[in-house]
Length: 483
Image 1: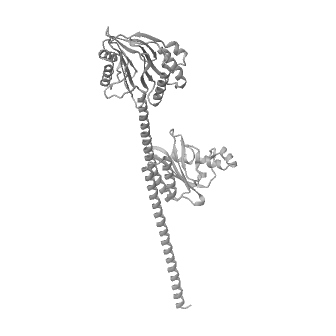
Image 2: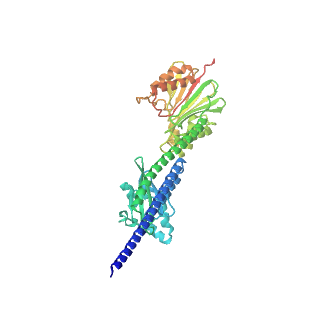
């Protein structure tokens, strides 16, 4: 063959190579353009996800809305078919499904009994997957929480967590799972998945998933903080409203009782008080004075206090015996009082303006009695059992009336144990002796001064120490005949 033939062949081959190189270059350019487009699309999806997540938190959206935003956003960013978010319960023993997207592949195994039900009703498996709590140390979800880092599971059914388990998993699914952690606290797990028929997650997908899971943890933690703050504010507002209602149940002003001066005060340790006092006009110059202390503090004590007040007012009108009144209150309330609660009470009936009085105590602190003639203080302490401890027979056998005569210038002080048990900064109690001394100094000055002096002395004693118990007092002074 001639030289020209070889030259022609060489040129043809060169043209073919040049064409091939050109095709490869164009193909590489298209691939680069495709990869660039995919990266731009992924960045846009990530931007939209973070934007939507920020809006959900700023608007104080419901927890369900935030969970949905996280799951649907992450599913979109990594091109999964579905996803789910499971949060730990208070004991950290269980993962509770808070949001499972509509097309999310199965992420947990099915117990044998569920599988048997699913053979008759396919909805059984779906219901179990979407509603069942999962043990925090079982399955692929529990495994992720245990190892404390994101995991990529190419084939869920072959994962070691399903070996020798009493559950079955037969789906061909790949998944990515990450723990949700905020402020050093495990919140739960975030998972996305897709069937093998849609391809597998790449390493790049896993890197992106880890990143959005970290952002989701931060967002979820902040959302929970906001939610807790809102719930706290709502509760505080409700408690303040309850306090205003409770304040109405206490006397709005001191009563005008012929022959006497009477004053009362209540200082709650918390928003809701478990103490109360009351003045009841019984008619025919008869008045009932009551003071009570429900064991414990807070809402439960406040509710029981309101019940006690209502019952006592209902049964007191036709009764002349304070012990009988307390007995009726006890029988009415006993079935509704928790075993760990009780009410100490003292009830005094003034009969006319001549100083005739009868008192009964239901396990309450003795009342102080200042005797004007002798300048001494004694205590009024008839026997009695607290309300709510006994159904009635023992209560009525123990609780007795004590009749006495109040002389002009005499003064009585009924009080709850929050007075004597008030603590100062050194954890010292105010005590009975300080109460007696303060009462002795202030009694000749009248009922209102007694309470003012007692509260001022208490404040001086306790200083900045927190008030540990409700403080309630009622002072009763018999006027001199010339007044």
